Image (cartoon, rainbow, N blue to C red; front, top):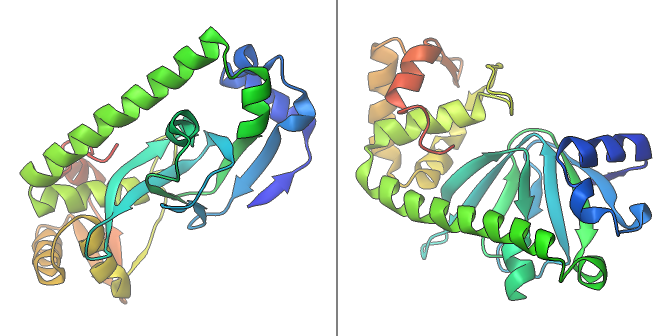
Length: 232
């Protein structure tokens, strides 16, 4: 994480996301503008949190750990999204882990400062309620589609999520062959099954393997297979 000293940019993010409505009682110096690099850990499950983060630019990957200590994707979330709100409301450690899927910008406010200024403000509490309710609905949907959707759909959705930026446009993303085992864990399947799916998609000219990396050849077909992306 890198702290950015740029108040005009901080103000612009507050106004663009209508956060200034809630945070006007706060001293602007209590709000930090932060950046996270792609692949950087933002939140680690099981660790205590001290701040609410508002992702205002970029995309993050939310995942949980299985009893076998394997990562399992819950969802990819595009800005704007709030992190640490459930933990703030329940005063508990982080529920899930969060990683930057792209370079991200965030606004950070400590729990202490929130509690001392707007912690009991009705409009802020309503904002938190909507955010938390959306996350619990997402968790329910995740449990459902992870059981019902075939591996081909889950893998196609994963490729879409790592191959699109926060505005939904395609950029070149390469996936190293050595990470296929990790991806199998993330989407809840075996390495062998995922390899069969990859071979099938290569034969159908949807993707291709080139020098140990995977490239998307037919973006529209991939989107069709992904059911418009079950992870987003």
